[in-house]
Each structure stands twice: as structure tokens, then as C-alpha cells.
Image 1 (cartoon, one colour):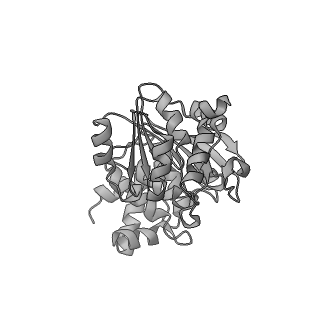
Image 2: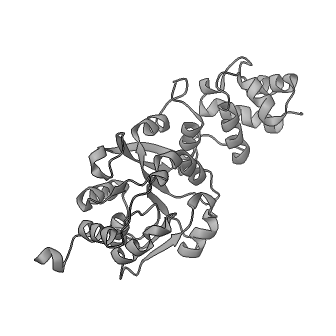
Image 3: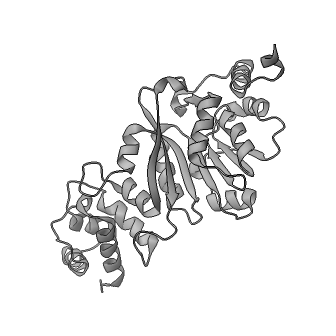
Length: 290
């Protein structure tokens, strides 16, 4: 009887989902985590402290949101599916340090959003997202002009392997390069499909990316550097010189001059270069007379 007088968060979430006849939307990739014990372990790994502001992307049924409210100073949850509004209202009732906004985070102005709710103070991100938007969300957060102190996120295991990849390997890509410029990534734990409701068809990993206090390379123009990274991997079968021509409107001679100034072979492909070498190309783009 006591569980009905003081129900667990998982039970509250399941009751609310059933009460409001919520059905997961396949097109939104909704796979909820409802286990309070598992989520508590994940938040231990995320290292959320009592003075932290937390931006939660994709609160789902609100179990993680409620747990975050017990650990953090303020929680701002951003949910794209307004169909979850009555569910979240039930599960999060009475939690004064939680705000839920219903919008697409990919279309949101992160600076405006975090300044409005966190008064411009530092913040961390925690997210359990549809896997098809993982890369886009990570790139948006890492390249923001108000990046979070850390990102703790559930990802498909294959995506985690890309984030951790090294230059010259098959997995090395623009996502890996940009995130490794932003911070240090580590896998915190594996999460099996049966932990989710409904279960996905892949193995998942919970990862944390901690923002560098100082970036691993000193870029004179971070925006140009990120543009160069994306150009370098745009067409993997083409040489970096050809990708530079397409992305920056260079002639063949100008592309060669940039690579020569950076000390990079004109025949090299972008995926063979380290962050330091990519940055040298970026700096050459900014300094050579085109």
C-alpha cells in the first residue's frame, strides 16, 4: 500500500503515461528511460553538483528531470513533443526549480534560452535524445557562442565510437574533430536496449564530454576553423585541396598555396589530418593573400 501513498518516480511516470493515453511517436525516435535506479547511476556519472544549472534536452516522461531537480540548483527541460505536456505536469508537479519549455532545441537560440533561465551563468547539458539528431545537437552545443561546461548524453554505441575516434582511422570525421576541439570525451557506461521503453534495436552508451579549460589548439578564428573542419570531411573521396576549392571558392593555385603555407601535402585527404594540422590549414586560409 505504501508504494501507492508514496509512489516511485517510475510508477508515477507510467501512471501518467497511461492516464493521458500517451503513445510513443516512432518518427520522433522516442525511447524513454524510466528506471529510477538506472537514471540515478547515470546522473552520478554525469557529476551534477548542487550549484549546477542543467539544460535537459528531451525529458521524455520526466523521471530524469525529477531526479535532476534533487541534485541541481535549476533545471530547464526542453521538449519538442507537446503531447507530453500533461504527463510532465503530473510527474513534475511541485518541483519549484524545474521549468519545461516546449520547442525544438535545434531551432532555439541557446544564448537567449540559457540567459533567460540561468541569468547567463554556466550550465551543463544532460540528454536522452533520438539518435537521428545526436550529431546535429552535439555540433550545435559545441559550436555555440555560449557552450555548456559539459555534455552528458545517451548515444548509439556506433556514434560514441565516432566521437572517440582518432585521426587517420575510418571513424575519424567532422563530428569527432569538432567535439575533440570542444572538450574531452569519455564513455561512462553501456546501456542495453531493454533498459528503454520501447527498446531500441541498438546498444547505447552514456558519454560525457567535458569542455576544455583551454582548447587543444589555438585558433585565431574558431568559426573559420569549424568551417574548415566541415569542409575537410565534406567529400571523403576528394583531396583536401579539392574540398577547399568547393567550400571556400578557391582556385587550384590558391588551394595549393594554402596547403603549402600550412605544411600539408596537397594530395592529402582531410580525414588523415590531426586537429593541429587542420588548424594550420585554417590559419593559412586567414593569412595567405588570396
